[in-house]
Image 1 (spheres, each protein chain N blue to C red):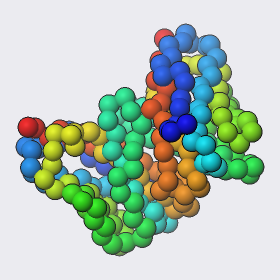
Image 2 (spheres, rainbow over the protein chains, first blue to last red):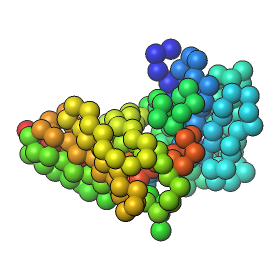
Image 3 (cartoon, each protein chain N blue to C red):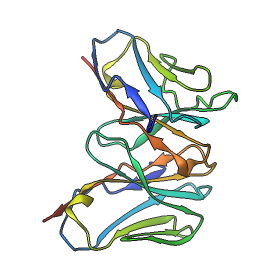
Image 4 (tube, one colour):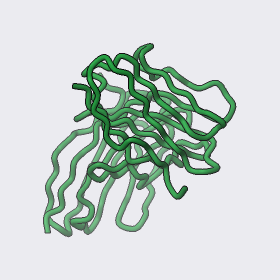
Amino acid sequence: GAGVSQSPSNKVTEKGKDVELRCDPISGHTALYWYRQSLGQGLEFLIYFQGNSAPDKSGLPSDRFSAERTGGSVSTLTIQRTQQEDSAVYLCASSRGQAYGYTFGSGTRLTVV
Amino acid sequence: QKEVEQDPGPLSVPEGAIVSLNCTYSNSAFQYFMWYRQYSRKGPELLMYTYSSGNKEDGRFTAQVDKSSKYISLFIRDSQPSDSATYLCAMSANDYKLSFGAGTTVTVRA
């Protein structure tokens, strides 16, 4: 597609439920990133995938968070047993590999009630 | 202390004014510096990219990096109402993982 596509755009879930957020990167982009943006905070790095290399998971805040990228394309970020502090906008970006080449999606706004 | 500090503003200027934005950072390993613009309910979009120190100009936008002071700036000349957005500085040591400032909200009044 022409841009990075994320779904759903909005998600309201009850505390304790699991959620899955999807990212469809730009075709041909080998690198895929997940960031989290909380109100009044900058973007917080979560995870980075590059080709077939092992992902950099150093930003995942707890073991309730996991992500996978299937076939080097679509990625899913899963949050288990959601907590209220997980409420944020989750942004996905893809690039050809360099930091300056990020293209961001519009994000998924997650609200945990 | 945050790795990247950015005054959240808000900043309000009249149309045609120069907008001045800046960030400071603590990690001396940063060598890739970027400015992003983010409109409400949209993802950030890259405005300017600079490698190492120096100035870069692109149309109405000028980015400056002073690594000795760990300070970066973005200037917007002849500001327009369409420039109203949140501006985020970002930087990287390894060319893939970005550290972002909190963002400065700018309003340009017609």
